[in-house]
Amino acid sequence: MLHASRGWDSVSRRFSGTRGNILLAGVAGAVGLIILATAVNQVLTKLVVAVVAPLAEELMLRGLLLDWLRQKMPVVPAAVTISLFFALLHNNGLRSGATGWLVFGDRFLLGMATSFLALRYKTLRPGFVMHSSNNGLAIILFALSHQSRRKALF
Image (tube, rainbow, N blue to C red; front, side):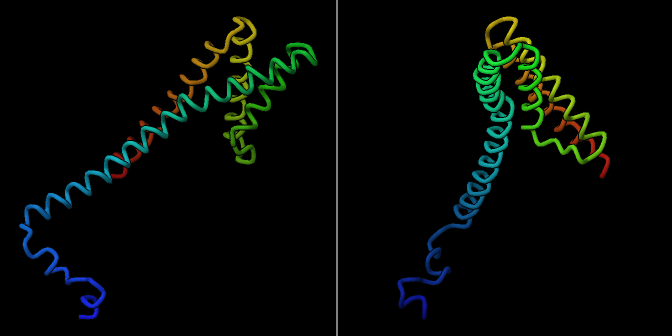
């Protein structure tokens, strides 16, 4: 009765005329929306990592900073500087031993390769494709390794 004075009816009164299958359909719809939102979130996250981040990084690092540094110093030191910055930008945990240094080296070499492509072809497209492909492949390999770990647990 306390809730009725505030305009709240009991649950049994609010749903008294509703059939069980309608309530079940409502619950199923809510669960479906949660699953859909989670899937969309997963896809968008992967899209950002595979496409948006490489595009932004290539525009910023190779499109602006490399071009600016080339005006201040020779091409090779400019490319090395940008590639070191690129590798450091990606939180790779150099303190984690050999694995951290391997990841750092991988990022540095990716930075050198995309810098070379930008300088050689005077466009960011090949470097963007390489960078985006690298990230996309990393996403796929990460997903596959997690799948195999899950199977090993069961």
